[in-house]
Amino acid sequence: MVCKRETIINKIFLLFFIVIFATFCVYLQPVEAKPVKNDAVLVCFSGGREIVRKTVIEGPFADEYKFAHEVKVVDEQGEHQLNFAGGLCIIDRGAVTVKSQPQLSDRLSCYSGGKKVIDFEVYGRETTVDEYLEGRTFVAKARGNVFNFESLHQYLVFGGGACIGEETD
Image (tube, rainbow, N blue to C red; front, side, top):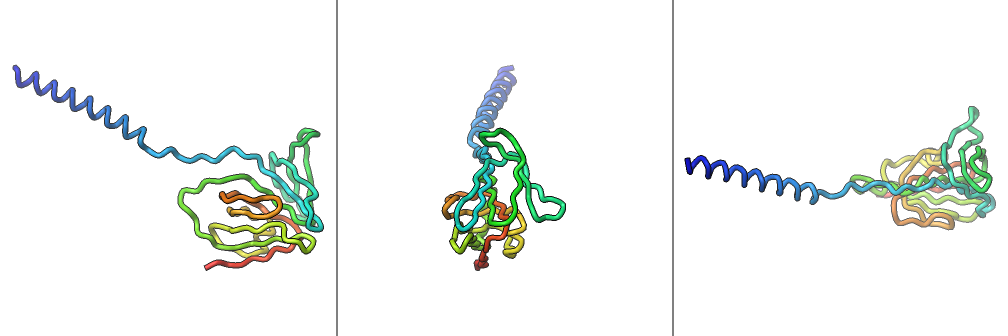
């Protein structure tokens, strides 16, 4: 009888320690990084100068002829559609988190009116400059007049500004 009682008590203690251990293990797990809620920002240049800066809440959408793009923005006038074409326009969709550190694949420098306005260090899949200028989303660190981030952000580049791309090894 005493042996059965000790066995039951031992099982209860073992179960108690397993529950405590499992609870601590759950709290020791790293917290999953979540993206910071950022508003996307559209910035357009002409002649090397910033001519528009708007908070994007929806889009971009290409028109049927792909000569212009449209976004839904919010500003002091409220929410409305904004069309843009020509020049150099960049959308910063904000900071992103990645599970593993991607490799640096390209360096992209963009100019407006003969003046460099931004340098991107592009991470992930390498591609060609024309794909970047067609509004392809890419992840990069940016340095320049308008965006200067050491963290990875998601960008789209549109327009007729000159961009020079270099592959990295």
